[in-house]
Length: 267
Image (spheres, rainbow, N blue to C red):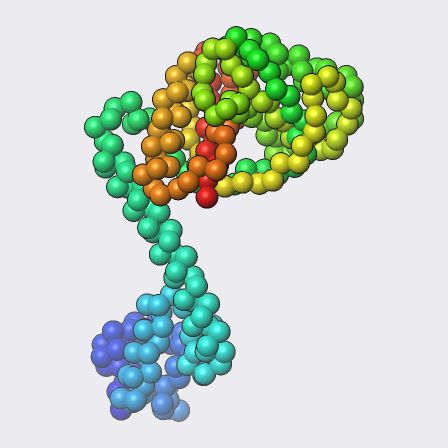
């Protein structure tokens, strides 16, 4: 038999951990001296603690290890961990792909201020209107006017939670002049609709999200980055790109502080 100090060295497990395993019943000493309280372990228990270490390295928690050691629910625990590891592997592959993309494009200075993430958009009822506008200057007159009109017709209507409004360029072609756009804003319920406005149910969709800070005339660069990132990482675009306005002329004095999110629907 080995005293706890020697067993600690042989098993490469701290004395504190061995005492904890004793307390929870995961690995009790083979013998405890009733007079001095010394704990003693056997060579067979070296095999058991090796198995415990092996399960820990596979990512199992203490309760799961106890069940595995005791032969409880083993198949389900292993299958569950397998599923978790597959998902972790997928996430690591995504991260690796992102790193490779950044490395391959580090010389492209125009892309250095952009990063891409994957997210899901809110779902809900949205009112929508197609508009033909000369440019973003007219856009920020037309959209507030539409909001005032909707509020007047529907005084009890509220914006969705979270708030979500965006445009898409009809036909999928980005333009900052002679814009043909479809505007959407999620609200809490359907209501009355002025001429040209209708209600649609928007489903949540998976998108690549790229944040653009600055003037709208430079949004084309954010589009280019988002599409290149999409292609480089093996995703397929399945819908028109969305422009989600977060900060703009309504709350930021300088266009350098305007924040727009480019959302690329993908599968």
